[in-house]
Length: 406
Image 1 (cartoon, rainbow, N blue to C red):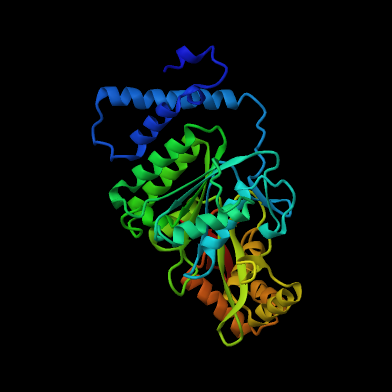
Image 2: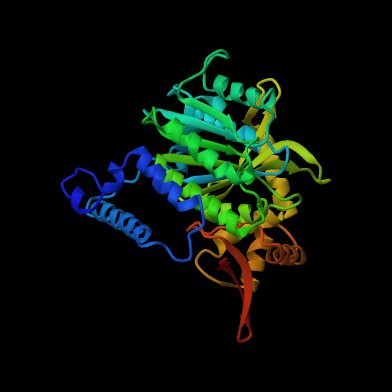
């Protein structure tokens, strides 16, 4: 298909491709390493694809750009955008899969009213979606069927119903070298009979690669997922484990996920004064590319409802007060993002501000800042870029600043 052939079409060439043509393009991109010297025919095909994209972008750039409404929002703040890659990270047992399944059920439900079981999350109104759930680790006799049941029932379907717009499978038994192919093959099959936007949940994404500590594999994974978003009109929500004892998602895959994700949520149990887990669960918006990050969301697990519910307001207030007095490293890191958003500040000014706000001693604040500089917890500026806290000296003056991570 050439640019000349498509001058008279109503839409740019890439939008006129069939699913088979799009899938073929996707396969070309990530099913094998490029040879060092491409054949002339391959170079011609590559150039034609780039020219077709240039034409499509050129057409789009001549018209007013109307940004799509978020797929999922909360309190009028967009949380997950259309055709994006997003992550939920957390430690083992932190209910990260349960939160993801709740959002999947939200996308599946046909109930347009505000339902409290969805924790005040709302999906794009007056639109239906096809939910595609790909599991990588649960057993297929009990655990995975139980999770599928939970999504269906929360979405308002009976136990014995199988909604056409809810598709699910497992790649647990597939060879790791074939898992990209397995994911794309299933998504291609799901796409064929429907025009609904695909909301794809992968639990857990590190199992889609052979080695989550391999930078090349991790970059290839997110290139692959980004292309699936474009080629199949899909949005991805990925589950990823955190490294034990840290706030960082697992391996190089976790690092790349944080860099490439449009939205990154972190879920975990809060600690009491003795360092033990409480029944309070905090959801942090580590990264929100679409706007200013909201305050953390506090939840509890309800045995009666077999799911997550909003925590009691008085319990939240007491816990937030405890965190401030504790001068928690996570909270200080969050505050630094807004404090240093306009540029570097003198160290004395940063110390004084944090001492006042957290009602902490200077030595405590200095210790927390040293920890943040050493451990580099996940921090993202208002543009969604990964940053870290650094310091520098200028003449006799010392400053703190946020430095983008390469």
